[in-house]
Length: 552
Ligand code: ATP
Ligand code: MG
Image (cartoon, rainbow, N blue to C red; front, side, top):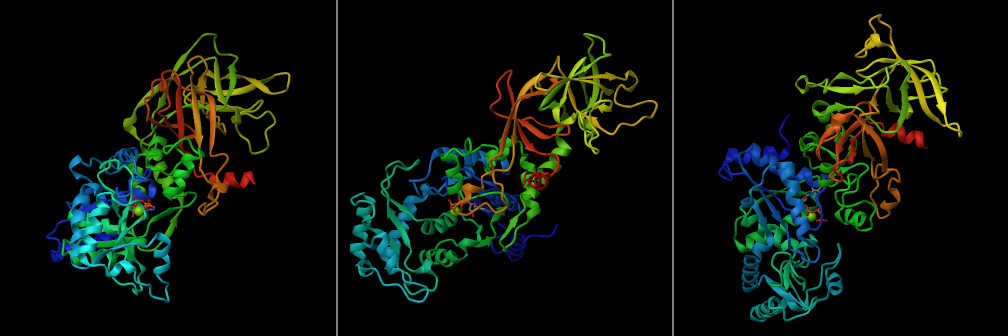
């Protein structure tokens, strides 16, 4: 694969010696929610560059807003980054809050140089004074305060002597700038909230725009990679760094990841959780990294997806099928096959000796010769999928029906002889005969059948709950203020009496297998001894469009 535009920049910098060959990247999340697949793109990009160019990758928590941030989010973010990017040692984990003292010193320095001031305007007034695209803004009355008065007020703000909203600290740049970010942006607000790391030490907190470039500077970041919406903040970061005369990283913007059938705004994800539209941040239907992991997505498949979609400066929406395909392709190679029946129909083999059980050989993964074989017990009573039987089949239905012969995977050919029903006319049992000559699933006389079905022997079946996880939204572009109306009412179907082959009896949490003919499934953390719970990781094929059409 060719280089992406950021790799080209890095290689050019290495050629010219701009950073003396150093590559220092970072991922700077705000701990105000769980990470999602969009963040995965940023993590893979930054960690990937550091790895490729023998550089270093930092995780830095941008914990500048105590009102919305929590330790739970810090912990989940570290778990997710480590899962995706490999080990990130403790020594490479940083917190903006550790830099608050340094930032404060720099704010004082700007004030002493006449480049920052304490402002009395309320938020509403500030908006009013900011001006419009056509008209320049009006100067705040605080703009002309003396250096001494500014410094005194700043120190009192820090000491907690004023209520929230009373003052802000602003940079003195240009109220007529065509770039609104330069119209005297706010550097500090008074916030009387306990911070998850600094407790009650601070009564003022830095704005993102003030803090962000300083954090990168302190960590000697070389390539400060962010999404396109920060492009017009760059002149402001440059201004701060130049005025302070400190180390100056290079900011590079790229297009954020958007996915079909997915909302990614943290505000909306938080709403889905808090209003209980899903069971939690790691509900397998969520686009969060913790949900993808819980659902059985391999980290390597997520990395492959991020690699395949590439890095550009053009905003686009990626088809979620590409993510699902990356997962399918990987699991097809790595997941062992097992048999499970989700909606069981009882089949009795009439000519099978009572009480007799046979252990039949089954290949674990036809795509992986090293995966070996296992045995699957077969007996007089088995379960097949209810959908694999029809009493009065239409022309193109080739599976089990009266008089029809089919193959049971790894087992025998069976022929349907009789159908038993309850008083209401529902099929309760199907009676078949088997052909002993077809053991293993081949007829020595060369006769053909048109269907191969999966099955599970009743006597040794393991019971399980299976959660048929589907897309959370029904439309391609669910985003927008009324996104909740696009929720898929069928995003989760729970099957409580699935039957599994006994090889799955003690499968540990996290195990991913292919249930033959049904899809990839993994053992969910809700499993308890004797009661397995599975999630559907992904279906075998992309059937979404077809299924949707049927439903309409
Ligand atoms: P907000 O700032 O609204 O809380 P955010 O998604 O930007 O939400 P951050 O914690 O600031 O959250 O994100 C951390 C990093 O992840 C940032 O560098 C950001 O550019 C990057 N990022 C966030 N969303 C995406 C996305 N959809 N695609 C690629 N990168 C993203
Ligand atoms: Mg952000």
